[in-house]
Length: 532
Image 1 (cartoon, rainbow, N blue to C red):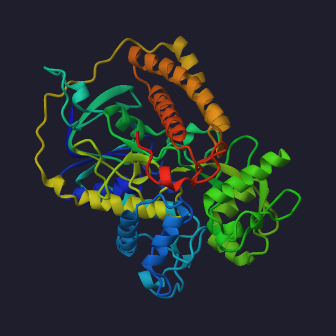
Image 2: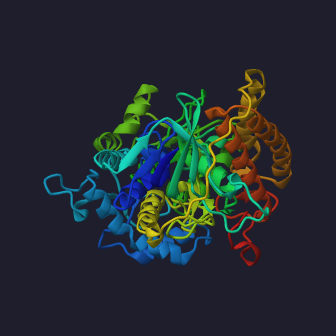
Image 3: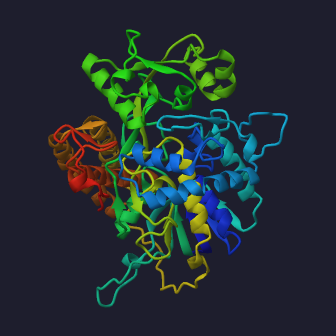
């Protein structure tokens, strides 16, 4: 049994910022499924949005966020996060983040940061580090954590379950407000369950885009935090709003990678395979329209023409700027035989970001006592029905920092007698073949029936199929020894069912949720969160 003051599940920006903040108050354990860099944060290319230019304003950023979110975001939450944006950038600069600057001869002050514009933004307000912003931020935060003697990192470990009253023998069967006292963690290398007990637990496990066949996310993004919190009794909100990034590199073998929206911000435009532009038919901002509109437009055009991809044309953008501003994309494209200064890039939408998640306050508090959540795993109310580009890193940073400085971190916690994990049976290799096949069925079902454009008939078909699959997976989970793949498959099935249940509750089209049965927005009935 491992005893810590603070337990952090996840090693992205939200998890590491929280760990650094609470390390002033006690010992911290950071649990990560692979290595520290294996997370969505590290994959983030574009940047972090904040009002740091004299020609910009908080009001403008708030309105852009609210409009992009199809007027479902919570204005008070948006205002708080936007106003704390400049402080968030200063925090990252102090940690050593090397943002791209306007004048390399001057210092890396906030005033000297180079800013770009992305879809849905009315101003240039996205601070970036070439086209690898997430990686640069992660480098700075990981360095800070490794220098901190209060922080212990456990790589190749995956959380199985949060420790709550559900694991403690009850005398009368009544469970008062659920509390969290840590988590049961699987050491992936030796397949042993470890018990981590902590006063406070932070869920920063990221998103769940691996529930789809085509995704921009690393393979660790299996929705573990959302699934565990839901199993423990926490509410989740707005799970129907999954952002498909409109421009993922199209590859027939499925090995896709993200083509940042900042490339369109610099002047790249979308074209059909016949060379014609089309986005002007869908939105006044053309190729720089909000992501939900661009993804839906591409999806419609591809289905209409029975084609697999459109083109992103950056050939008219200054070639020197392309090479210096987007070195990661340049390198990745050249490996595929494409010189993006001369050639069009084949792109198609891919599952990218969850606007919904565990329902939290602006400080990361959940329904469950002692349990925080921040980053993509959480739903604060910032994004509404669609995330404005580069607001995700901003939210992760602001909420994690607030959670790390929350007064409740100073409270004493009374622990019950926590039992060790009880192994059940042995791992049945023969039955596992069926369950591993189900993982692929979940991904194919979600891709085909719960994608960018939906219908209630297909949603109900997917629900029936996936409910049956979940029962199979859950039965295997309860009667076999634990493996990482079993936990992930269980979590993916839970996430899939939550998405479908949420999508069926919302009988309108709004933001990222477009359903053919109800193609208009209904503010009278549905300008509110979908809560499970």
